[in-house]
Length: 222
Image 1 (cartoon, rainbow, N blue to C red):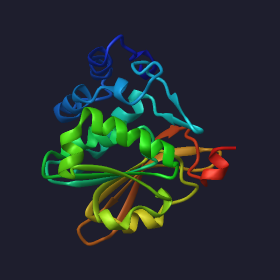
Image 2: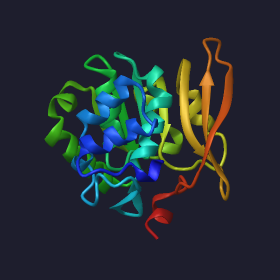
Image 3: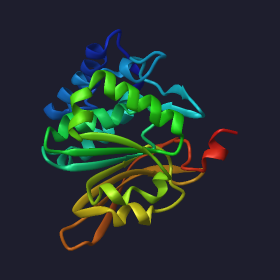
Image 4: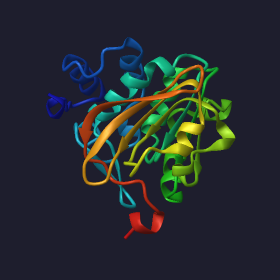
């Protein structure tokens, strides 16, 4: 079970996620081995539960990152582009960057400047070549509106719950493209939105979740 996937090291954690059937793609497994969660989470990085990163934010549980990467891996092929909304610690941005390779491009966006500064520092320290080459970058902004300057994207991940279908993000998807996002207020579901090559969008409910809401910085910091 997901909550039993904690490990003593990053490798143990990833192996446990694999053994539990949460991650099965070799590319996802490789990326999660390559990116050490301890570079982005000071507290209990290998515990399979959300951990506080300050400023009213958390780094999601490893099994949720695993599920996200598995659902998006078709759109995280070498050379593709991705956006992580509510990028927080920067961990998932790094995992995505590992998957899209040297010719790919990943943007993380968060509305808390201190979190952006922290994730930038971690990326520069541990994955300096990716930052210098432009493979990965993090910016401060309202992720609910996406990040037009870096788009369109093959895939978009959202790390907080949108109250309704995020139209602005769907508009920044390529055709084809995929959006992975928790949706709802009291009752939340992760929904995968697929845009086909004609621009038509379909949706699939994946699982029930409990996420913090996409909100204004002032409300998050209350």
